[in-house]
Picture (cartoon, rainbow, N blue to C red):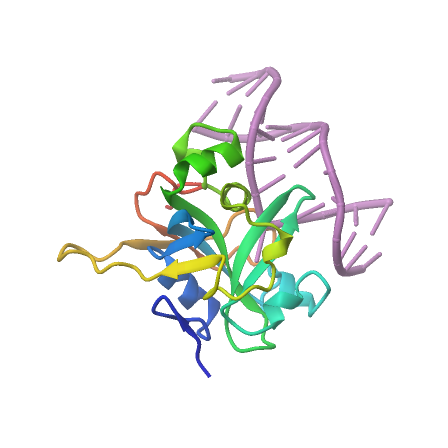
Length: 193
DNA sequence: TGTATGATCGCCT
DNA sequence: GGCGATCATACAG
């Protein structure tokens, strides 16, 4: 069984989906932009919420692929993930940053901030700018309020340059290069190296 | 440019 | 009881 949204097969392994998501446009209620930074997580690896098995918090990650998994981080921030692999596996992609494109003014209002560079540079900031909360947990990504738009074919120039590196803010499985980012983008939460 | 710290809460041990 | 898949602010150098 495969589920394809915006040209991406969400039943693929998380690192693969994470890499392919770079350049895809994500809108929530018509507000959003181009994904430029992601991280992959899988139940077989101890940095993942799924490592310990299914719980009330992470149940969405064990559901069908192509849905959202939203969790609260540090009691303050919401973070948005895309579920992948087959149902019951436990894998997902954390959306860490995007380049604001549509509804920039509304994002500014939600964030109470002028600097466009910091509107969506980080998972907590991104969720706030897009108005993502627990209410979005377990919702399918191919239906309202979500909208995923396939990466537009580059106009004959070079394909997107995607770099990989260690994930941010974790203390386990640091060796996995499962963070992906668009090379040189100024909207990254941190530069890639 | 870098390191430290507080805010704040659900979930796990 | 403790600890985050974080962020903003406050300082030091």
